[in-house]
Length: 278
Image (cartoon, rainbow, N blue to C red; front, side, top):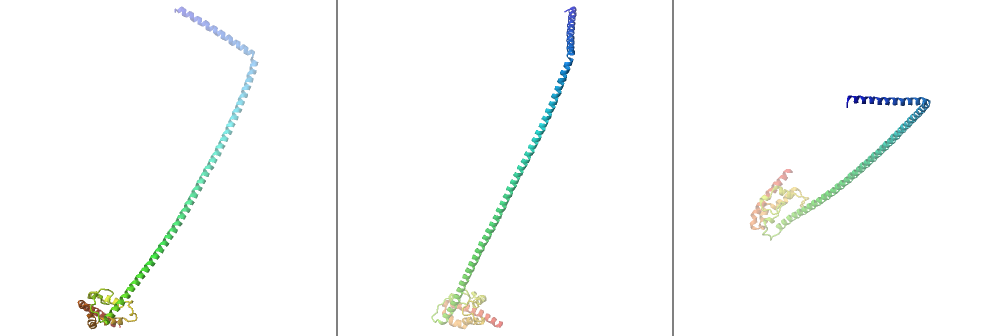
């Protein structure tokens, strides 16, 4: 494209723009003219629109106020419901706690009563067991006493029988003329022991126990000296060696003389002591 063409095109564009401006300006003038012709009517219309807009604004404000009031009332209602719900929940929780407390108290009371009953039962059991022990111990004590009494009675009966046999043997030794083979262990020696075979079996203590024993029948009224005299006459060496020894077996006579001599010496010492006491 040449420079002339560009200039021509530029002029055409300016003409077009000028026409557009003139056309636009004409439209504007026409509009202004119509507006001037319609001015009062437009003012009324504008005033009406303004009134309606104000009315709509007022109505909108009222609706907004009503909506706000409704929202406030709704919020108050919600708050009231929430308060009532909270109070109801609080009452429910308090009721639950009250029931739990009541249940705990009842459980404690039941436990206390159960423990009290157990203590009472335990005390009754212990008292019963103590009574049973006491009864058993009393029965055992009575049984021991009975056995001891029976043992004492048996022992006393045995001693009484022993003393009776002792006296009977001496009676037979004195009166019988047929005895010639009495054994040493069968001899009646003044000790509570059977089978005396040696002077070592004779002691003052054993002789005193025999002579002064309270169960010797027929000796209760005799004095200690009288009891000693009875035995001294039996074991006097002259009488014993001449009248008693010959009734023993030949093999036992010498040992019998030794034992009798020991008994006689013990009796003599005991008699001397009794005389000194006088």
